[in-house]
Figure 1: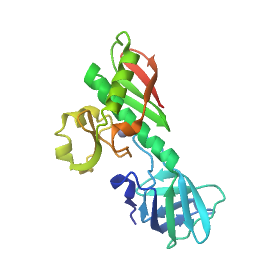
Figure 2: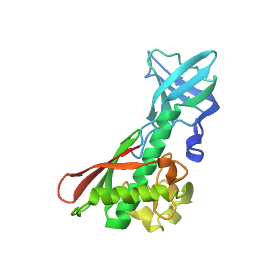
Figure 3: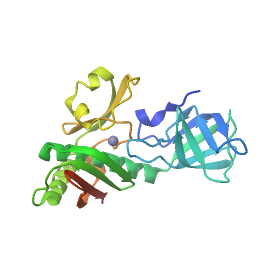
Figure 4: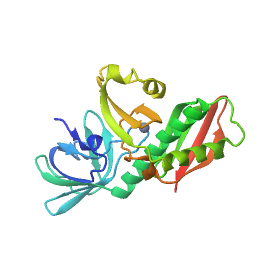
Amino acid sequence: MSTQRLELADSSLREWDATVLAAFGPPDDEPGIVLDRSAFYPGGGGQPPDHGVLLWGGVQTRIVGVRRGNEPVLIPAEGDPIPPAGTTVRGAIEDERRTALMRTHSALHLLSGVVFRDFGALVTGSNMEPLEGRLDFNLESVPEGFKETIEAACNAEVGADRAIEAYELSREEAFAIPDVIRTATNLLPPEIEIVRIVDIRGLDVQADGGTHVAATAMIGEMRVVKVENKGKGFRRVRIVLG
Ligand SMILES: [Zn+2]
Protein backbone atom coordinates (compact mmCIF):
# COMPACT_ATOMS: atom_id res chain seq x y z
CA MET A 1 0.00 0.00 0.00
CA SER A 2 1.56 3.21 -1.11
CA THR A 3 0.29 6.66 -2.01
CA GLN A 4 1.70 8.47 -5.01
CA ARG A 5 2.27 12.05 -3.80
CA LEU A 6 1.08 14.15 -6.75
CA GLU A 7 1.70 17.55 -5.12
CA LEU A 8 5.44 16.96 -4.94
CA ALA A 9 5.73 16.93 -8.73
CA ASP A 10 3.00 19.47 -9.50
CA SER A 11 2.04 21.96 -6.81
CA SER A 12 -0.52 23.57 -9.16
CA LEU A 13 -2.66 20.39 -9.32
CA ARG A 14 -6.05 20.89 -7.63
CA GLU A 15 -8.24 18.01 -8.97
CA TRP A 16 -7.50 14.40 -9.83
CA ASP A 17 -8.97 10.87 -9.86
CA ALA A 18 -7.97 8.25 -7.34
CA THR A 19 -8.91 4.93 -5.81
CA VAL A 20 -9.35 4.35 -2.09
CA LEU A 21 -6.67 1.90 -0.90
CA ALA A 22 -7.88 1.73 2.69
CA ALA A 23 -10.58 3.29 4.82
CA PHE A 24 -10.84 3.33 8.61
CA GLY A 25 -13.57 4.38 10.96
CA PRO A 26 -15.40 3.75 14.17
CA PRO A 27 -15.84 1.59 16.09
CA ASP A 28 -12.36 0.14 15.42
CA ASP A 29 -10.33 3.16 14.38
CA GLU A 30 -10.07 6.89 14.03
CA PRO A 31 -11.72 7.93 10.74
CA GLY A 32 -9.20 8.00 7.89
CA ILE A 33 -8.79 7.41 4.15
CA VAL A 34 -5.71 6.34 2.18
CA LEU A 35 -5.68 7.01 -1.59
CA ASP A 36 -3.49 5.49 -4.30
CA ARG A 37 -2.85 9.00 -5.67
CA SER A 38 -3.14 12.12 -3.56
CA ALA A 39 -2.34 15.81 -3.95
CA PHE A 40 -3.20 16.60 -0.31
CA TYR A 41 -0.09 18.07 1.28
CA PRO A 42 0.18 16.13 4.55
CA GLY A 43 1.87 18.90 6.52
CA GLY A 44 5.52 19.26 7.39
CA GLY A 45 8.39 21.73 7.27
CA GLY A 46 6.13 24.24 8.99
CA GLN A 47 3.45 24.07 6.28
CA PRO A 48 0.04 22.91 7.60
CA PRO A 49 -1.92 20.19 5.77
CA ASP A 50 -4.40 20.88 2.98
CA HIS A 51 -8.15 20.89 3.21
CA GLY A 52 -10.43 19.72 0.41
CA VAL A 53 -13.02 17.19 -0.65
CA LEU A 54 -13.50 13.73 -2.12
CA LEU A 55 -16.47 13.28 -4.48
CA TRP A 56 -17.84 9.77 -5.02
CA GLY A 57 -21.16 8.04 -5.66
CA GLY A 58 -23.11 11.27 -5.55
CA VAL A 59 -21.83 12.30 -2.11
CA GLN A 60 -18.91 14.30 -0.80
CA THR A 61 -16.43 13.71 1.97
CA ARG A 62 -14.87 16.88 3.29
CA ILE A 63 -11.19 16.48 4.20
CA VAL A 64 -10.15 18.61 7.16
CA GLY A 65 -6.61 17.41 7.77
CA VAL A 66 -4.04 14.72 7.17
CA ARG A 67 -2.31 12.35 9.59
CA ARG A 68 1.26 11.61 8.61
CA GLY A 69 2.59 8.11 8.84
CA ASN A 70 4.05 5.82 6.23
CA GLU A 71 1.21 7.07 4.03
CA PRO A 72 -0.79 10.28 4.27
CA VAL A 73 -4.10 9.39 5.97
CA LEU A 74 -6.85 11.87 5.02
CA ILE A 75 -9.07 12.91 7.91
CA PRO A 76 -12.76 13.30 7.02
CA ALA A 77 -15.03 15.91 8.60
CA GLU A 78 -16.98 14.49 11.51
CA GLY A 79 -20.13 12.74 10.32
CA ASP A 80 -19.19 12.75 6.61
CA PRO A 81 -19.49 9.42 4.75
CA ILE A 82 -16.25 7.45 4.35
CA PRO A 83 -15.68 5.84 0.92
CA PRO A 84 -14.88 2.13 1.30
CA ALA A 85 -11.66 0.59 -0.06
CA GLY A 86 -11.87 0.19 -3.84
CA THR A 87 -14.06 3.26 -4.38
CA THR A 88 -13.12 5.56 -7.24
CA VAL A 89 -13.11 9.16 -6.02
CA ARG A 90 -12.48 12.61 -7.44
CA GLY A 91 -10.17 14.52 -5.16
CA ALA A 92 -10.06 18.30 -4.96
CA ILE A 93 -7.85 20.62 -2.92
CA GLU A 94 -9.31 23.79 -1.41
CA ASP A 95 -7.52 26.23 -3.69
CA GLU A 96 -7.68 29.41 -1.64
CA ARG A 97 -6.02 27.88 1.42
CA ARG A 98 -3.38 25.94 -0.54
CA THR A 99 -2.45 28.86 -2.77
CA ALA A 100 -2.12 31.11 0.29
CA LEU A 101 0.12 28.51 1.98
CA MET A 102 2.28 28.16 -1.14
CA ARG A 103 2.77 31.93 -1.30
CA THR A 104 3.54 32.04 2.42
CA HIS A 105 5.98 29.12 2.32
CA SER A 106 7.83 30.65 -0.63
CA ALA A 107 7.87 34.02 1.14
CA LEU A 108 9.59 32.46 4.16
CA HIS A 109 12.27 30.87 1.97
CA LEU A 110 12.76 34.23 0.27
CA LEU A 111 13.09 35.94 3.69
CA SER A 112 15.58 33.28 4.78
CA GLY A 113 17.66 33.89 1.66
CA VAL A 114 17.60 37.68 2.06
CA VAL A 115 18.52 37.69 5.76
CA PHE A 116 21.36 35.23 5.19
CA ARG A 117 22.70 37.16 2.19
CA ASP A 118 22.51 40.59 3.84
CA PHE A 119 23.12 39.75 7.53
CA GLY A 120 24.62 36.24 7.58
CA ALA A 121 21.94 34.97 9.96
CA LEU A 122 20.75 31.38 10.06
CA VAL A 123 17.16 30.19 10.53
CA THR A 124 16.51 28.31 13.77
CA GLY A 125 12.73 27.91 13.62
CA SER A 126 9.62 28.69 11.61
CA ASN A 127 5.86 28.57 11.54
CA MET A 128 3.16 29.54 9.06
CA GLU A 129 -0.54 29.95 8.58
CA PRO A 130 -2.19 31.09 5.34
CA LEU A 131 -0.74 34.53 4.45
CA GLU A 132 1.31 34.94 7.65
CA GLY A 133 4.39 33.36 9.07
CA ARG A 134 7.52 33.81 11.12
CA LEU A 135 11.14 32.81 11.02
CA ASP A 136 13.52 32.73 13.96
CA PHE A 137 17.07 33.82 13.25
CA ASN A 138 20.33 33.37 15.02
CA LEU A 139 21.25 37.05 14.88
CA GLU A 140 23.35 38.72 17.59
CA SER A 141 22.28 42.31 17.10
CA VAL A 142 19.72 44.08 14.99
CA PRO A 143 21.02 47.12 13.13
CA GLU A 144 19.04 50.36 13.02
CA GLY A 145 16.21 50.12 10.48
CA PHE A 146 16.52 46.32 10.20
CA LYS A 147 12.77 45.77 9.79
CA GLU A 148 12.40 48.33 6.99
CA THR A 149 15.63 47.18 5.32
CA ILE A 150 14.65 43.53 5.09
CA GLU A 151 11.11 44.40 4.02
CA ALA A 152 12.46 46.48 1.13
CA ALA A 153 14.98 43.75 0.21
CA CYS A 154 12.24 41.08 0.24
CA ASN A 155 9.97 43.13 -1.99
CA ALA A 156 12.87 43.79 -4.36
CA GLU A 157 13.26 39.99 -4.69
CA VAL A 158 9.50 39.63 -5.26
CA GLY A 159 9.82 42.27 -8.00
CA ALA A 160 12.82 40.46 -9.51
CA ASP A 161 10.45 37.52 -10.22
CA ARG A 162 13.04 34.82 -9.65
CA ALA A 163 12.06 31.31 -10.71
CA ILE A 164 11.30 28.85 -7.88
CA GLU A 165 12.05 25.27 -8.84
CA ALA A 166 11.62 21.93 -7.04
CA TYR A 167 13.78 18.97 -8.06
CA GLU A 168 15.35 15.86 -6.60
CA LEU A 169 19.02 15.16 -5.98
CA SER A 170 20.89 12.27 -4.47
CA ARG A 171 21.84 12.82 -0.84
CA GLU A 172 25.47 13.21 -1.90
CA GLU A 173 24.70 15.84 -4.55
CA ALA A 174 22.37 17.73 -2.22
CA PHE A 175 24.84 18.00 0.61
CA ALA A 176 27.55 19.19 -1.73
CA ILE A 177 25.56 22.45 -1.99
CA PRO A 178 26.65 24.88 0.76
CA ASP A 179 23.16 26.46 0.90
CA VAL A 180 21.58 23.07 1.58
CA ILE A 181 23.94 22.42 4.47
CA ARG A 182 23.36 25.86 5.95
CA THR A 183 19.56 25.60 5.80
CA ALA A 184 19.30 22.00 7.04
CA THR A 185 17.78 22.86 10.40
CA ASN A 186 16.53 19.29 10.76
CA LEU A 187 19.10 16.70 9.82
CA LEU A 188 17.70 14.29 7.28
CA PRO A 189 17.36 10.71 8.49
CA PRO A 190 20.22 8.61 7.05
CA GLU A 191 17.83 6.28 5.18
CA ILE A 192 16.72 9.13 2.93
CA GLU A 193 18.67 8.75 -0.30
CA ILE A 194 16.80 11.19 -2.53
CA VAL A 195 16.53 14.78 -1.33
CA ARG A 196 13.89 17.16 -2.69
CA ILE A 197 15.32 20.61 -3.24
CA VAL A 198 13.44 23.91 -3.45
CA ASP A 199 15.55 26.46 -5.26
CA ILE A 200 14.79 30.18 -5.51
CA ARG A 201 17.20 30.76 -8.36
CA GLY A 202 20.14 32.84 -7.26
CA LEU A 203 18.83 33.45 -3.75
CA ASP A 204 18.08 30.38 -1.61
CA VAL A 205 18.41 26.60 -1.89
CA GLN A 206 16.89 24.29 0.71
CA ALA A 207 16.06 20.64 1.21
CA ASP A 208 12.29 20.94 1.48
CA GLY A 209 9.15 18.86 1.02
CA GLY A 210 6.68 21.73 0.79
CA THR A 211 4.60 23.24 -1.98
CA HIS A 212 5.73 26.52 -3.51
CA VAL A 213 4.68 29.06 -6.13
CA ALA A 214 6.60 28.98 -9.43
CA ALA A 215 8.22 32.41 -9.19
CA THR A 216 8.76 35.09 -6.54
CA ALA A 217 6.34 37.58 -8.16
CA MET A 218 3.51 35.15 -7.29
CA ILE A 219 4.22 35.75 -3.58
CA GLY A 220 2.95 39.30 -3.88
CA GLU A 221 3.73 42.14 -1.50
CA MET A 222 5.49 41.13 1.72
CA ARG A 223 5.21 43.13 4.92
CA VAL A 224 7.56 42.64 7.87
CA VAL A 225 5.16 43.38 10.73
CA LYS A 226 7.36 42.69 13.72
CA VAL A 227 10.92 41.91 14.77
CA GLU A 228 10.98 40.48 18.28
CA ASN A 229 13.96 40.00 20.56
CA LYS A 230 13.43 36.58 22.14
CA GLY A 231 16.77 36.38 23.95
CA LYS A 232 20.47 36.44 23.24
CA GLY A 233 21.02 36.07 19.50
CA PHE A 234 17.40 35.03 18.97
CA ARG A 235 15.26 37.29 16.74
CA ARG A 236 11.79 36.44 15.54
CA VAL A 237 10.67 38.05 12.28
CA ARG A 238 6.94 38.06 11.50
CA ILE A 239 5.62 38.64 8.00
CA VAL A 240 2.20 38.98 6.42
CA LEU A 241 1.37 38.91 2.73
CA GLY A 242 -0.65 41.62 1.03
ZN1 LIG B 1 10.30 25.20 3.54
